[in-house]
Length: 267
Image 1 (cartoon, rainbow, N blue to C red):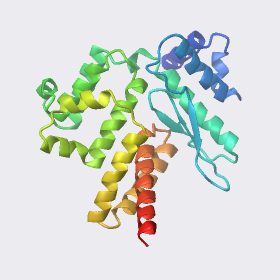
Image 2: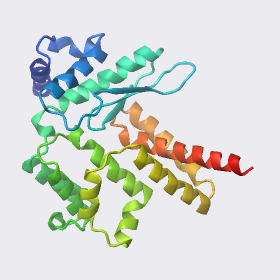
Image 3: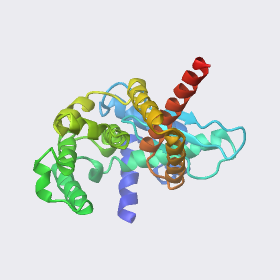
């Protein structure tokens, strides 16, 4: 642990040389530090694309505790895990979690290398009780995962996060099963979605899928939304990365909103 903390201090000093690394996470201006951290990476050419640096979103609430989410370049999302009595406190707390994860992401162990891929694939095969030889076949789950990692060689895990979230959503939504039934190869699906961002168009298409599911199974939208809200809350309280759970909430909320609008128009 001491060596990890020392590595973190070295990273902070390298990216933000004027900052006291010993007190960086206690700094009251942690929001500014987080922005400066990613601004320096952008200036150094370490970012992919031209997306906004850091995006904050406060969960609507008339009274405490207040919740704030912060989304980083690459799509990773974090939130404050403790109760906050003001929106400003929530914003600072979320920024602190995001800054810690941003700094840890700079460690060599977080970059996708051949060694990292080998270790990750072995771990995935072990957890899934699969065969390590499947890594050479992109038609298998492990093979698809290996191909995704190989396609992102040199990136960090935070930079890889958005693509991972897309495929988590496609699996949750049932789209991957449909692609298989249509004889689309996993490699084709991965190549296609590697070129497309997780944006409003993506969410709208998924929302339409869930409206269709609601027509087939009335009540499933509300049921899934409650599950998504519970998962998001549990993940936030645990200080985990939140993008998948937050996107589920957004997609289901959009589907419910559109469903209600259609019902109101029909009356």
